[in-house]
Length: 346
Image 1 (cartoon, rainbow, N blue to C red):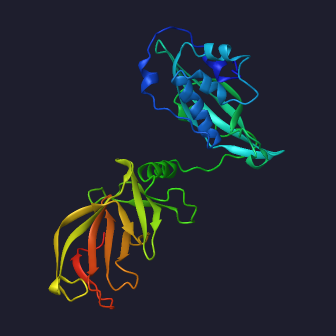
Image 2 (image 1 turned 45 degrees about the vertical axis):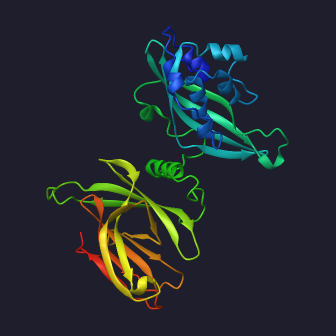
Image 3 (image 1 turned 180 degrees about the vertical axis):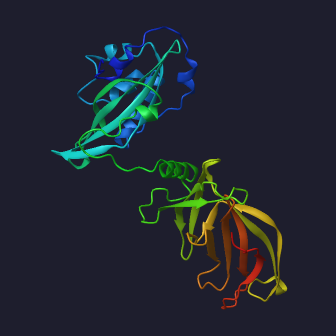
C-alpha cells in the first residue's frame, strides 16, 4: 500500500479533467489559525477554493513540495477536498509546542471520482513570547496520508503521536460554536468562568412510548452571556436526536401592569396576561436535574422587592412554561403574585 507523504502527493493519484468552477466560488472562506486542527481545515478550504498560495503558506520551512509550482500542479485535477479532524495531542520542546492531528480527507476529482485518505499531520507553534516580528502563527510541518475506505468518521485515526487522544464532546463543541456565532458582540462568548458552559444529559420517555421502549436522550447546554449589577443572563441550546441542535426559546407571559395613579412606586391595581412572548435569554437561571426544570429569577432592581420568576419543565421531549410569578410592587417587601400555575410535574 502506497503511503503519501503530503496532501499534494495524495491528490496526484487523482487524474481526470472536468472544468467545474462554481464550487470554489460558493465555498465560504476559512482562514483560522487559532489551533492546529483549524489550520488543517483551512489548508483544505484553500485547496478547494483553488487558492494554492494560501494553502502553501500554512506550511512552515518544511514545505510539502520542492516548489510552489509543483505543489499547485498536484491539485490541478482536484475539484474539492472534504476534511475531518480528530482529537489533537501535543507536547512541548525547546520553546515550541508540537501538535499531532488525526486527519481524514475525501478528495473529489473534477470528473466526480472520490478517494479517501487518512493519516496524521504535525504542526508547530513557536512560543509567542520569544518571537520577534513578523509573528509566526501555528504552521504545518508535514502530513502523512494513505488511502482508506468508507466514511471520513470511520477512516479518521483514533490518535496520532504517543499522547492519548483528548476526550471530546462533539455536540458541546457544536453548541459552543453556534452560541459564539449567534451572540458574538452581545454576549461574552469567550468567558473563562467555570460555569461559562454547562452541559446536561436528559434521559426520558415520551407519554406515547411503549412500556419497554428504550429511553430517548437529549442534551441541554447553558451558556453564560452577561452580568450586570444584580442580574446575569444565560442562553440555552437544546439537542435531540430527532431535531438536532437548536437554540432553546422560552414562552414568557406578556403582562399589563397597572399602578395607582400610573405611578410604578404606587400600589399595584392589577396584573393581567395579554399574550406570550418567546425569549432567547433567561435571567439568574439554573437547571435542576432532579425536577428537570429550568428556573429563572429576574430582579427588577437591586433590593429584589420587584421581580419575575419562571419555571419551565421538561416533558415529552420539550420544555413547557408551567409557573410564572411577578412581584410588581416596589414596596420594599417580597410578595410575588402567581399569574400562571400549571406546575403539575412531568
